[in-house]
Length: 250
Image (cartoon, rainbow, N blue to C red; front, side):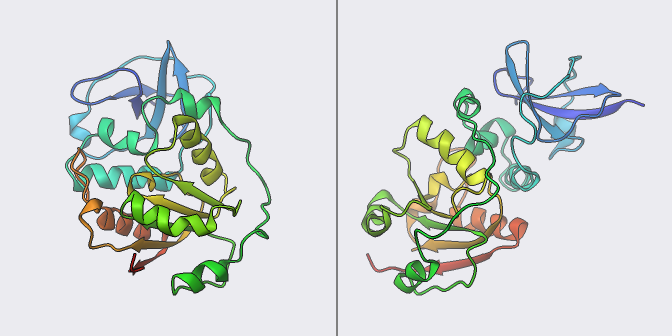
């Protein structure tokens, strides 16, 4: 029996987006990543937001994936939700998580680490500084800053801590690709970032802290035109993580 799968292309356009569908008997696993005929392809799955818009069909031979589960199910749920809520497209939303030059991510793929040591920094050290406490180091924690100035003034005191990842808009594509795999494979458990870097394939996001949520910097003016606190609320709902708003007075 033929099944229909929706595929995202990193290199080619199909209609007004970069989505096409294939019908085949062989099962395709959602989130697997393929390279076929010089095109990089991500399997979205058997369903998609606004399905009626994606009717372009191709006949391709999907064999062994280049990478299994390039992104997690929860990340694609977030992508679907952003497309639906903000009336956006996949070609504008997926690059928030997997930027267009996908070869950087593939080239710098890291192997999964089974265990990680958290001895370098105490979670109590961080939360004493920002009036927050957690009793677990077995989960990932995201701290979001509204602008580079606020981020730099606060994060500098933690810059020598190897278990904390620091992300902002000025980092290189190489640094972005390494960060993607470190966060995906749970090699970093605390992330300090500006708002443009929140779009990661989180392993197990438990805590989200947004600093000075009232600032206008959190409103993105490009498609999809999202409001960061609203996006973090989607993260919180899908990951079942707590969402805290703090003012640090910088």
